[in-house]
Image: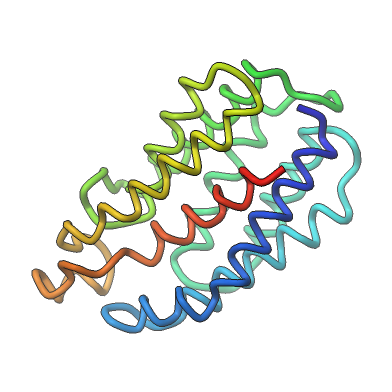
Length: 200
C-alpha cells in the first residue's frame, strides 16, 4: 500500500472522528469529563496537519503523525493514541510503500505499544475493546484491500460490546454497574477511525 493511499485513509479516519464529535461528547458526558469529543477533534486535526506536511515515505508519515499527536494537550486519549501511532511508526518502512506483511507488523507493534501504555484488557470498557479486535483482524487479513475493512468491522463489534461491560478504568469506574448499557466513548472513537480508514 503506497504512502499516498495511507494518507487518504488517515484523512478519512480523521473526517469520521470530526463528524461524530458531538456524539462522542454526549456519550462521555454520562460517566466521564465530557471532553472526549473535543480531544478526538484535536487528535484528528493533529493527524490532518501531519499528513499535509509529510513526505512520501511510510515511516516519515507515521513518525510525523505520532509526533503531532504527542504534542497535543488533551485528555487521557492523547498519550494512548500517541503510543499506538508511535508503535506503528517505529517499524514502518522507509520506502514509499508498505507490503501486506509490513502493514501487519506495523499495526502489531502499535498494538504492543498501546497495550504497554494502557494496561487495560478486553472487557474493561476502554479503547482496548475496539483496538484489540481490529488489530487481530489485521493480523489475519488475506490482502491489503480487506485489511482495513476487516479491522473496521471488528472494531465496531468490539465497541458495541462495551455496552455489556462495567467500566474498570478512569472516572467511569466509580459509577460501577450504572455504566452498563452505555457504549465506551474511547472504543467508539477508535471504531470510527477504522471505519474511516476502511473507505477507499
